Amino acid sequence: MDVHEPSLREALFTDAKTGLESFRERINPILREHFDTVIAETAKEDELVAGALTEVRDIILAGGKRLRAAMMCAGYFAAGGTDEDRILRASMSIELVHAFLLIHDDVIDRDDLRHGRESLHARYARYGTNVFERTEDADHFGDSIAIILGDMVSALGNDLIFTSGFSHEHVFRALSELQKIVSFTVIGQAMDLSFQFRKGISRADVLRMYEYKTAKYTVEGPLILGSLLAGADEGRTGLLSRYAVPTGVAFQIRDDILGAFGTEDKIGKPVGSDIEEGKRTLPVLFAMENATRSEQAELQAILRKGVLETGDLERFRSILRDSGALDLSTDSMVQLVEEAKRSIGSADISNDAKGFLISVADYISERNF
Image (cartoon, rainbow, N blue to C red; front, side, top):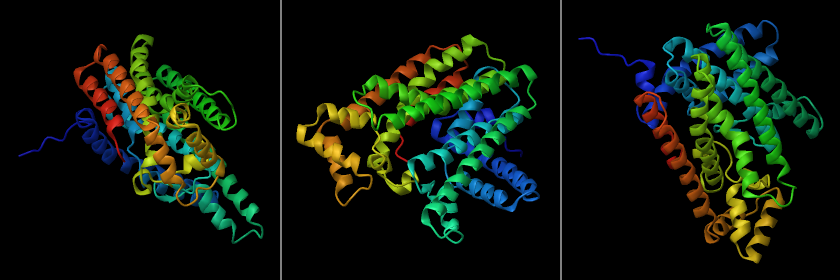
């Protein structure tokens, strides 16, 4: 008796946790195969770059929910697309763009771990210690390799849309949208960096930074990319945006909470790295508004240290709890999720797509990985 193999759409459009797990099982082998092909071709030209691409491949496959690629497929199906093989391959593009942004982000944030593995710049800085006499030269080598490999991975992501096989018009619109996504992410990243020395930062400033830095390339961008490859008009992309932006901002708030209260094995990088970078997150902003003066002074001192000392992380956590910042951040996240669910609940899309997107919004607010 033949066992029915669910289609990509059927496998994805269940509850978020099950759908994302099933999707990851389908896309990871394709990602590996694609990287192996690119690595083999690159090795004919340069072994160093081929080796670095191998490191990138292994970091990508070491973790990640493939949320962005799944959302790209969801946007495609929600807009009426039916070519499952083509959109699955094309959806790798946003995962590679994600990887490119993370490679550069690890350099900016000086994070030495990604998905529990040594980050690219850290790996090649360590390699550089065998070549260069000065530590700063080895570090510069590691940063340089990460920057240029990030650029290459970005180009590989664009190429996957170029060669996706969709109509020229749809490919052109998707590629144009992808450049906007990256540009907004850069703006959000710059805002995030500037908040460390700017004064008078408001909640509206932080939420706009979250929209640009995270929401546009984590939820909104992938959904719209997929819908454009299915030929969606502005009305369809607009309704997806109304769902995606609050969902993406909620995603970032949850990341901020996990960055302080999670564990390294769950988040794949050192807990407290955002604190060491002095980042002005929404929980930090709430704490600065509601903590006592002495607690505010402690918080500022911890954020300025650059390296957490014994007891700093626990004190930071206690200030966020005692000031109500943790609860206020969680409440903000829940409100955004409810806004997203109301928006997509009234949208004119298929029930299976609608149910999946509602489940994703809930999953984002509840996740503890």
